[in-house]
Length: 348
Image 1 (cartoon, helix red, strand yellow):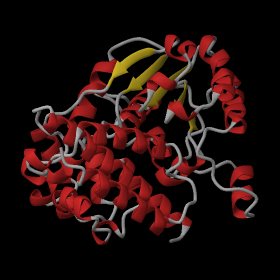
Image 2: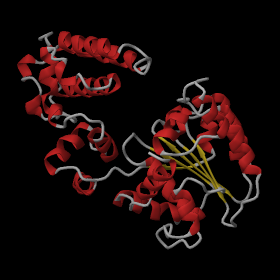
Image 3: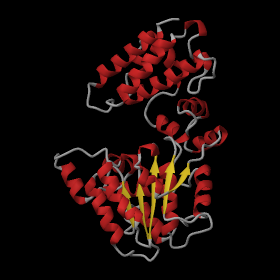
């Protein structure tokens, strides 16, 4: 794909109307004063989308009562990723995923194979952001800085941001979006107004998923698999995995069936096993499962022991810390499935 075609594609994506719950939260936050917002909540609720809607409204040449006009020069500049008064702070992997350009030096280093895209917000990017904060706005509508996922700042980059956050130039606004706000420095959190993301109703989420092209038969199991978080459900749909496999997943793990997950990423399988472990523990306690239907789980008499489930939970949590390391994916899938089978055959 040519660069001009990629830009055009990003423009189409960026100008889609926001989900109803994002639009409602945008309205609410724009009516409140404050130079820095921290948007917090679990993944899949639209922190990045809400943050971008706020920035669009702040910088828009002709903002409406409900946000940006989406037609002015400023809105178009954000669509094509070239607004001079907008600074994005993200890990390079996230920037590439969302279509934001890297700095010339970072792009050159990656193109020359000197290093891989960073999964953390680099100190070089933070220094550029601090320098951006000292500049005069070019368009007269002030400046904005978006940090996402904010928890990807290490202590060095977070402390570099803190000074600017404490004493911002009068025309600069911040929005930090996080899926793990507890990992942020307390001094960062205390400098921001905090907004906890709204959790949409299932009917609202299913309607939105239908608008994204998800079949009705697939939408419900996808939303259940995501624990009710619509953006995560959409990511599942776009991952290439078959939604019908989700219902078959518990029985496949009990049988040690690697074939069902052979095209999954290890991180996806680990996430699914953590959800299965949660639901098995819930069922063992007599509670309703969250991610799977009760009929998809083993019968009460065949549930694993509490000790087996507790040990599995501990093992999965430890594995999560290294799941993105460059292990052999096939062998890791087999190991994870084998571990699940051992647990699920440990009858009480």
